[in-house]
Image (tube, rainbow, N blue to C red; front, side):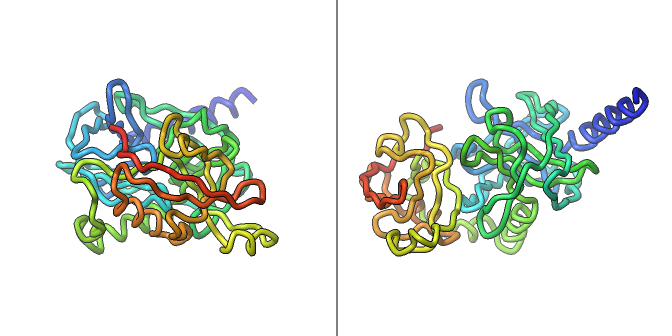
Amino acid sequence: MTQTLAAFSEALSRIVASAAPLLSAIRVGPNRHVTGLICQGDTLVTTDQALPVLESYTVVLSNRLLIAARPGPRDPATNLAVLRLESPWPAGNPEVATAQTGDLAIVLGADGEASPTMRLTVIHRFARFADGLAPVLDLPNEHVDPGNLVLDAGGRLIGLVSPGPNHEAFVIPSALIGRLLGARQAAPVAAVSQIPSPSPNRRAWLGVALQPITVPDPLVARAGQASGRMVVSVTRGGPADAAGMKVGDVLLALDGVGTSGPQALRAFLANAPIGSAVEVKLLRDGNVLTALLTVAGQPD
């Protein structure tokens, strides 16, 4: 038994060491950072909701080298954001994997100096996410940070951690990461981000994390639509919090525009003037409600 545990421990250490060059720490404020995944040599991927909008970023690589990065495309529908390193970093693309319920999952993060942190868990279940299903970890989301890498027992990338409803930790599947990077390769960043921004420095912000969801059949007629976006977290003091939105609400529309399309929310945020008041249509406890929300600029 002792030899078996020692071999298991050594295998985990090898996986962490092998994946460490893929980790980065994106500095987003004093003593604050977000874990990023390095792909394609000069590209970082992390979660959209955890990354404030800045003109440029400082990134700490796994050898503690500091390097500048500029913003790339962001996709709130999948909660993914891309940064482009000013200089390439010789890290190969990770081998990807699909997971099954019960599979071992290794959660890797980066501390402020981009040294790896690690937790061990399993895939607890699958839940609806974006246009498919996503693994849910057997860990509360308070124990992991958005953007942490999730690897399988072979060291292959399952995806990135994203907060889910009921304090669960979702995994954004690696297939969605590949899709976003494929879109980036197919067109320059400027072409991917053609939607005009109301401000050159700040993006409109609701202060809420949303998860695509199917409206239960008995409530479709009342809601007037078959899908929406469930509120999975609300930033205290943010616009959604001030408007009275709660975790578990289903956002149906903003100023009469449905939020169920993959680009609907992104398009709305790109065109919403900061400081404007918009009507939010919500489904809560089987009832349809409306509230006024004042759009704010995303905090630094």
